[in-house]
Length: 100
Length: 173
Image 1 (cartoon, each protein chain N blue to C red):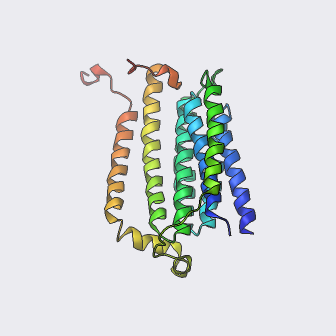
Image 2 (tube, rainbow over the protein chains, first blue to last red):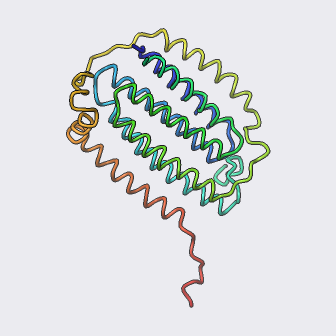
Image 3 (cartoon, rainbow over the protein chains, first blue to last red):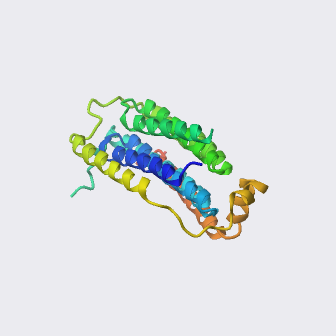
């Protein structure tokens, strides 16, 4: 029997990997991929607790997270296309139009 | 046997996650993300969540990742020379130290709490899909409808955003 803390540890490592990706990568598409890593880490946590605490609620929330991730990917990639059309770049450092 | 699979899925998903963040070519990053998603779906099988396994493979690996790769092909990116933040080492050190501390805390802490009403025996009797469906369409019906409206809004928003803008004088002739 695998302890619950093992799942939580894997999920934490994946979440920190995704967080690092958001912070250090400069390509907008890779930043969105790193957000997907973080959402997956949260899903592992939710399903693991759902299994060990014998409740279905975690699996349902994970299902909703997958749906939200689909919407986030669609809108985010549309924004990337719009930005790329105007500036011919997907580097997040060059998207500073709203910067004060 | 389950422990062997767990170790394999854990190592493979962590390696794939690190590769997703660290590789240079965006298409390679997308393929590493595909490996990550498939190994995470393996966790769901270990945790008796077969319905989520199917959803993860179909929606994540089948739809979302194809969307990413499609946009990558569409934009035809050239690989940037400097693809990390200029001072990423300042992020890396605290992140590694912090993650070790968090891991230490997580591995030592006990987890407990009130047990719910769906023990593994009851779930396996009719299948995970049955249990998810009964719960989804009784207690979580409002959230289900909200997610439906959200997805409709996301579809409309993505179409409106990504549409080619019409030239100003197109209506004259």
